[in-house]
Image (tube, rainbow, N blue to C red):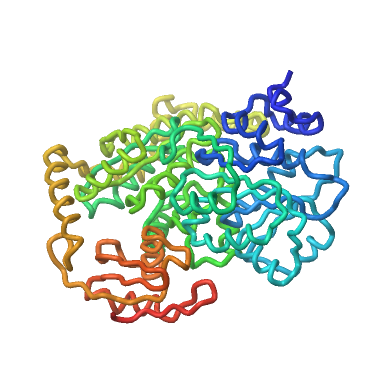
Length: 547
């Protein structure tokens, strides 16, 4: 008996997922599917990304809907366009090919007219991003009165992106739902509030520990001085020649600067950030998915909802301010049972924060030595040799060239040929790393103790006007608050992304329901006001001025 059959999955779906290679359910699937198949129980599933959540809710939905009634019966809400398309693709792969089940994706950044046309044709399941769904509701282009099942996927991500009011609006507009299914990697208080308000005694399961990283992710860090950060990033990339990953930077400006530097130096990379149009973003993501580019340089906001299989490494160019953000970053790798590596580049001032994250995610971070130049060259060389030995020569008529090759190399020793191949391939590496400096910080323990004392005194100082021992701060008023879906960490990230300022230029943040006050170094206040004042946030003009 197929193990999915034991969970209650019907024959047609079993056939489809067997073709896809699904034989053994993941823990979240094993616990969720029997509950969700009842169709009447509210449900909360806490599990990291990459654990098989889409099949956990997708298979029950495909089984529960009435195929004869061609109107929206199930609604899946997710934070981003990329995840919306991924879920739609997965559901189309899962469904019984003999039954005509329509799955329609609606999301921003593309023609709403085409999406309205698709909805008018009739559909069973709608997969939507919050903003576009609300737009369709207000245009009366979608009817939700007959929605029986609502799925909130990556609920914590939607909260981080300021969609709390949108989620509540959507739940209010699905009055006849039989059950609500909420999936999230973490459970912040705001989501708990939503669940209490709109769910009735939900059945709750937790896979692994909330706020904890996946067990198959190796959390590593490299300690160096701030001015060596970019050079350390290069060393990490060069020391892992088969790397396929995401580098997280703090701001759009950092993202662009890193991408431009690496591109000039010949790396197959691209950047994704908030200034890209949807068309540019789709192009970059297409290249990344088919591995035409090796690395994606991204801000946290731009990377939300990215679901790409096979990512080997996540690199934190700088640590995020919020532990939950770290959990989401590291969760991009180590998916579906594979192993992955999450690397952080830290300076002495950041070691204390690293220890805080380590305690909160209940995972030990392993300190790694920054590779020496010779180690990098050796690693690259053996990677090249392995690739050469594994090269597929079955598809070309290479034997036709053998007589010429034998003649050309008749007088050349095998050792010399190998040396010439190495010289052609590694001349750039050998020259670059010939006199490479040692970028490691020594005597870490003493430095950590000193840093912890500094950080503790800095933390105590946050009640005053000055931080980290100095700096005059100007207090700015902004007409955004908790009612706009922000909490302190997401608001901090929002203003940093908007202004391209660094966190160490900011002081205390006071948030109220309708307004907030931000302390910023006096020399950076004008830059922040210029970047934020007058811009639009969800249809409302932002006002920022000195308090």
